[in-house]
Length: 531
Image (cartoon, rainbow, N blue to C red; front, side):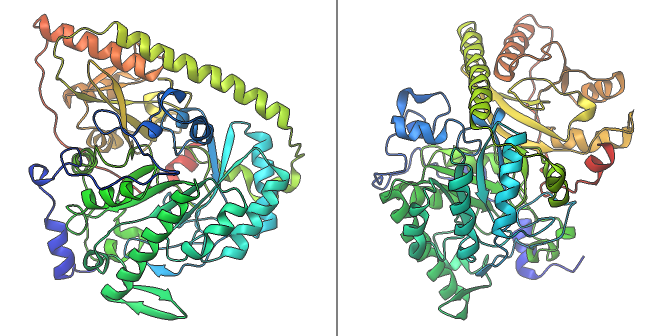
């Protein structure tokens, strides 16, 4: 690894103090734009059109757009799948946190694909995946470069899918530089969801993130480049809001650079009608080859990320279930089935796009989702008021469906819920090393797993062996398997009720937990070997 530059070393050492963050909930709000964004909010800053509770507090046309979109609805992400197609290789800006790879199969992060596709290949792949995965409801183009830096390829793909798979929602992700000039084209193809990566609203800060942009046929650098990018992003966001397009804002949290600035970003995008704000941790492992990674810039810890997200409550509604997917990901969030749908395998498949079959399957998925919601409400009804202000984190082993249904040894990602007497709130996820490999538990993996969920009081699993159970207990994390196959929120609330009863009975003493590590951009070799 290279020796960190003075600037990177300073950023690595510093981070925002939690007490110094000015929460959006107490800040004066800018006027909220009307249109496609969230124009109203509930107590606590939860934007009404961004809630995952159901259609009661949002317009019907908004609910229809988000109800089965796994990225725009936290509740939907347990049940519905998405896929990305890699048709847009070019990019018009350079980010210090990005290193694109076009032939990589073992890294899980944005900008990485196994193979670039032509629009024709992409359309064929989408139809094949949708015929095999009927709960796949969303197609996104997220690179591996910028979707609007290769507009002809991007829109040719969307045009073909409009004709061959009309029930699939269309999305694109962009840095926003070329966005204002292409809003009409976006609306022409009924692209209802657009993600814009916005990491700053102050060009001085932006200059530390973006070395250059390509603008008007020339390379622009420094603060001027960041100023142009910022103006284009804000203009594009306002134009999309005015046209009724739902926008999600992605922001990469970079300690020492934009951490204290993130509340201002949140306020600015809310004022312009953003539907969701997704604050993601920087991927900074040096092996990924990014400028930040090679120069010592660290990413945030779990509690540092959560502190900034919590400080933004009251602004644009927050998304916390992002997986920072590859640009060719397939499946539920948190899984990647792209290896099942390589071009050579698709050639051998008998593809039948049965729209009625897809609708019938999704109807059954919706029934399961409603059952999950009803179970959560029933558990809340049984909650008492003891320790009403207590909040704890629990880790959950799940393979989908909103249930505690994964063996501890098979987990490559835990979902994290913040549990209180009032709710079980999804707040993030943690990637971990696979414990069981070749049918045996690898004890050397346990310390890294414990570090990843060190801020949790319990881990809910379908099953767990004696050895990892003992080590978790020694680390102060309670392994819990009595709620196997129950819905997550019900299980978490039931465990929390029992936890409070044990405290009241004097059986245990409640203690605060420490911080945890976030491992993003994971390598997928272990998953491949265990498959």
